[in-house]
Amino acid sequence: MSIWIIFKLLGSLALLMFGMKSMSEALQKMAGPQLRHVLGAMTTNRFTGMLTGMLVTASVQSSTATTVMTVSFVNAGLLTLAQAISVIMGANIGTTLTAWIMSAGMSFDITSAVYPAFFMGIILIYLKKYRYIGDFLFGLSFLLLGLGTLRMTGTEMHLGENEALLNFFASFDPDSFLTTLVFLFLGGVMTFCVQSSAAVMAITMILCSSGALPIYQGIALVMGENIGTTVTSNLAAMSANTQARRAALAHMFFNVFGVIWILFVFRPFIDMVCGWVGYDVDMQKEAVETSVFLANSAKLSFVLAAFHTAFNVANTFILIWFIPQIERFVCWVIRPKKVDEEDEFRLHFITAGFMKTPELSVLEAQKEIQSFSERMQRMFGMVRELLTLSSSASNKKDNKAGDFNKLFTRIEKYEGISDNMELEIAKYLDSVSDAHLSDDTKAKIRAMLREISELESIGDACYNMARTISRKYNGKEDHFIEKQYDHIHQMMELTDQSLTQMNRLMKGRKESFDANRSFNIEHEINNYRNQLKTQNITDVNNHEYTYAVGTIYMDLINECEKLGDYVVNVVEARLGIR
Image (tube, one colour):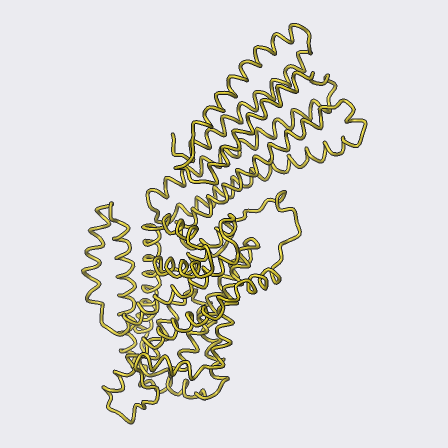
């Protein structure tokens, strides 16, 4: 075997993997938002969840993408873990369409047909309006070209006549259960190493179609691929949150359980699938003409695709009735960490390492920004509580002084968390923006960067208020009079209303959000600040309180007004208002 053929083999595999990735990303750009809405709406029960997962995965040609979308919805509370498991089961069926595309590519010479597709694709890309269709055509063409080249390379290598290869496979007893386990393990390891079940499936099809690899060992490799692809997602999910790890474990449980029961009916099940396709399992090369044997072998790629589909459909039919039990099992195995995650710096969504597509990465970042926004309102609630603790002159003499210091320390910690969240989300969005993105997604990333900057400013404003309250609490200045406390609480109530409106926008769909409510609250805050500023000068002149107390009082009022401005900036960024 020459070095040139080896490079041709590796290059065609690379072309196949790149084509699959490009095609999947183009499909997601064309239908990403609509698919996300479908996934959120069509999972009312386990059966609709399974059908939804199947259709979405068949549409975007990526079970990983469907799994990631599903996990993000679980984290956001839009789906239960049980619904997510049903969607993942459907995704396993949907992903078998890839094997059928590959078997067609292996069975027919389609390389000549890809060149018109390349030509059409480049025209559509330059038209811009249809460039995602062009990207899809390019991805599909690369996939089919890779398959065609792989098929021709396999023919050139004469694998069916390679004595060393034939002797290697012949050294395994075809009737031995141990042989099946060995090839099962090999399939899993190969998939884990190349990080692509499609590439391993293509290699398996080449080996089987050439007559080098017996069908039973080939199917054992396919079963190993099913497990290998879940090992990757479980390792990637180790750094993710509890629900993501549970979903990944449920995916692994589904495939491992399927492999276990199929081993008990291994030969009869495969013989049944071969009968459907019309493949003669018992045909020997020596007993028939070469053309007849090759025609029979050509059906092997369809046997592998049919087995892959039959295996996942049968496994889903068995396990779909036991989703509550699977949910309890994964919750028992993976228990939440016993820490107060609310007070810990942890990105909940974008730490999932199996994010592979930029369009979906933006969705995860949006969920993270939503969490950031909610955290800033909690921080402002702590500032209001701190003001209440400081309001009594007797606090320093009783045990509430400890509560005050503890709460102030917690606010300090939140300020550090807000700084870190801004940096980490910005870094993540920066890495996503390096990818080939749609114009809409680029605009979303620009808006998100503006949102996190303004949210961090809200954290700074809250911390400034907390420091002002602490300075007054620990200083020698007189306490605020009752009227001042009333005004500050009223201003803080308006500010909290603006934060509530902001979070309502971040959680919901911007098309149904009434922005005028946020703008009206901002006008109220500005007018109230101006009114209190004028009144403060009058009260100081009338000696109702000292100038020093009046300065601290207005510092709090002005900081609330600034915070209101930052909130409006977040709303404008989210709505795309410059």
